[in-house]
Length: 425
Image 1 (cartoon, helix red, strand yellow):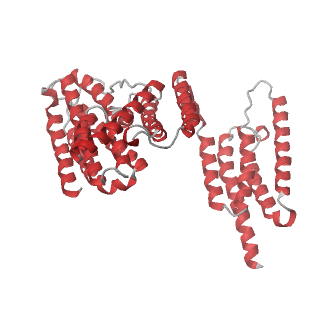
Image 2 (cartoon, rainbow, N blue to C red):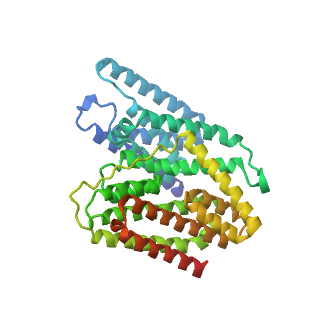
Image 3 (cartoon, rainbow, N blue to C red):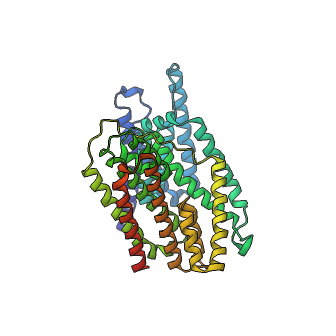
């Protein structure tokens, strides 16, 4: 009996705690209002959580239906309060955030009392965070462009509706082309790129070279390289090291993208791939630190303007899907005709254009067609090939004299990747 009593106390305390958490935020939010002007504060929210907990505890004695009935009655009370508030404050735009919060608090309190204390408390913390982030969320919404929203909606509709309808089996030469898998990879890459695009557009502007490079690398490390090279061209000789550091940071983020892609497609080969990628990442960060510590100050504003296209445009998605399909067929064909050497040759050539497609293709092939070692070496070769291309782009735009530091660092990083792959794969 004593244990049962303690269990009930624990459940009710958990329900009360959820109300206290959410009520703390609501009370702080309305701290400047007069006592009678607030719909609900910390006391009301605490009682709402406890109310849900009490009726959840009484379910064994009353039946489950009572909890629904009380919820309906509580909803009616909140509606009546809202209607009365509207009549007394006709000139103001009254939202229903607090009212919805009360209903959610009642529900979370009942959830806690039903034995899901950790889940309920976690949800209460999430609700508290959402309620407190009103200025931030509204600021983001005001910055969103209509074209970005429409592009995202179009791709989401096509993905959600089309993806389940696509056949999940192979077609074409060697049954290489799987429509479902290809489109799922398009959604994955578009999502990663869009994340970087939004961060650059709404969080990374005028934030400095390194931060811009970090978040820009998620969207397109090539675009970061070209933008920084054009900016470096305007600087005097000797003051471009911070821009070279930015190029290397974007390349390091590319390595993180590769890890994410491999983890989604074929996590098993990460056992082989992590050593060369980590080696290249550490060498890259080491070079960035050296460049930053030895950089000369520039008289120009160091906030390059990245020219990134919206990655959620349907033509962009279709182009990547077509490229991925071509790479899949070529990789299988070259492996059939020339063995592992054909895969390595394609890796180098593909890396000149894009790392994502060859990474996804080799990760998929490592499940059945090639060994994990071949896939790992191919991915490393593609990464190195793409990194060298970025160095070439920087040299083309900024000039040889301003790119000497980048040249020897790219060679060191590439050599580190080759040696680590040769020794451990």
